Image (cartoon, rainbow, N blue to C red; front, side):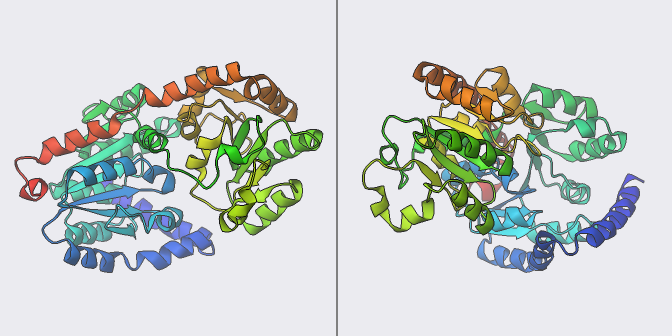
Length: 431
């Protein structure tokens, strides 16, 4: 009965969403890309016959960051494994279609019974991993009925889901089909136990912490170094900024432009041409990162004061240059990732909208994250924390400890998967 009701509701929801989003460029990109999914599977099967197939699904880019440590660690341990990666969103697909540790990246067709059966029967995965919350009923039911193990990692349940009886029923169904569920913290274990008491769940952590720690410890060199900035001025990395965030720094810059007390690296969330032109007009002394990359002579001496980053994918490593980090989004839908800069052991600052970010809530509680509402409070944070080395190091230690004390989820998850298959799956143990 549940399957029938779900499929009827999904049918009408699909029509409704198509009418609303049919002119949306991201939606159109998904429609164009998903038609190639089954031909991608056929080509993948030809190239990886006899290998242990792991299918990993994530909603978009942010969720896929939680899959990367698992993929890369299994790659180190096993040679006879092939990864088929799917995304629901076009942004996730476009950001990772050339991800070097995958064997194929594709879109996931809509969750109809027909699509699910065709997908699973064509791919024939040996193991399926869903990341966080993008759990689709027909796919999960089909996988389970095919006796293929299903793992949900970094599982979270939103408060909205907890308060919606229909969604709770849906989650109970999909979680009960999962072979094993790894929850990111005790709160999530409690929520999941309330929704699906018989589900096979355990406390883990967030694999993102392992990825952040890995990047911090690799310390991959950048073309920029601290030595290229004005001497003895702390560097503030303003990451994933929106217009409201940038306006705060603009007001600060106007008041101090004759002798700016800090150096700035501004990384806009959307480095579009119009946004970059606006930032260049706001900060006329700012230099585009692409200009530095194409003309290293600009790095002669320690003269840089403001750098504007006009490309994507560099923010996490750029935090390594910072003595402090301002994280954007806190004046809009919600603050962006605070765990990434925290891994570098630097004090954090941002707007007040943190309720959707458990990391930000915990970091504020640990006094590693300062919340501000205006330019005056930004100035106070810079004067009291950023320019005071003792305060800066103390809050930076608290931030780093938050991340490093949560490492280990990747190994925990991989051990569980290996225990499931070792000894009874020749493809998995073959080297």
